[in-house]
Amino acid sequence: MPETTRALLTAQAAAWQRILDHPFVSRTSAGSLPKATFDRWLAEDYFFVRSFQRYLETLSAVAPDDEARKVLAGGLAALAPELALFEQAAAERGVDLTAEPSLLNLGYTSYLFTSVEEGWPVGITVLYAVEKAYYDAWASVRDTTGADTQYAGFIANWSSPEFAAYVDQLAGLVDRETLTPAMTLAFDRVLRFEIAFWDLVSA
Ligand code: MP5
Image 1: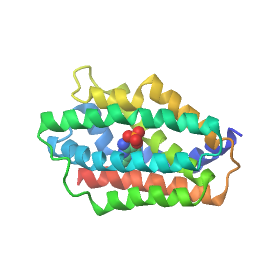
Image 2: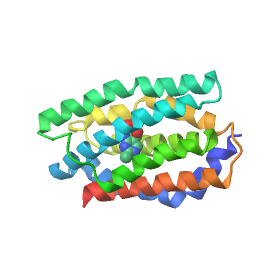
Image 3: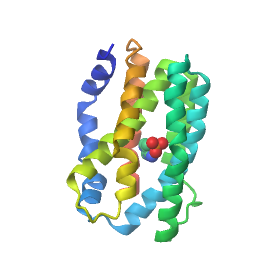
């Protein structure tokens, strides 16, 4: 049922555009993002990704079959090099990765865990929304930035052909489900969290 992801994306077209048009994204592309803003994102997102790792393990435990478990295992495997990328950038930039996360970040990551309790269709919808948002945002940076960007590692991490294939596989898992109001709400919530996360680090 490819119409499930199509319906989710169509209903959220305006919010999706706000992610792509967010000043954090456009300034990252233009090379005009203040260092402090990127550094704030780095520390907040490190906390997010470490929580996300445990969330993905929790979601895998309720995956309905081997196909789904295999896709999620691929996502989990990518997180070790991703965390290493954050740690290297933080060391180079002098960022403290142990800083207290914002309440927004705690809310977003808590919501990820809560969503698993709503069952697989909502859980996989949330995962798809989280990853698709980052794929589209970083693919936009990739397509609009210069070759001398300092963010090459992060662009590659979320906009590589491998990550694109992973997001497509997640879409395939969502498209096995019939759309429910709970899935629509979960998708909408993730987008609101994503926009608020960019707003927070840019403030
Ligand atoms: C992702 C992220 C992508 N790193 N941070 C936010 C706020 N949203 C989405 O997740 P992952 O685990 O880095 O692919």
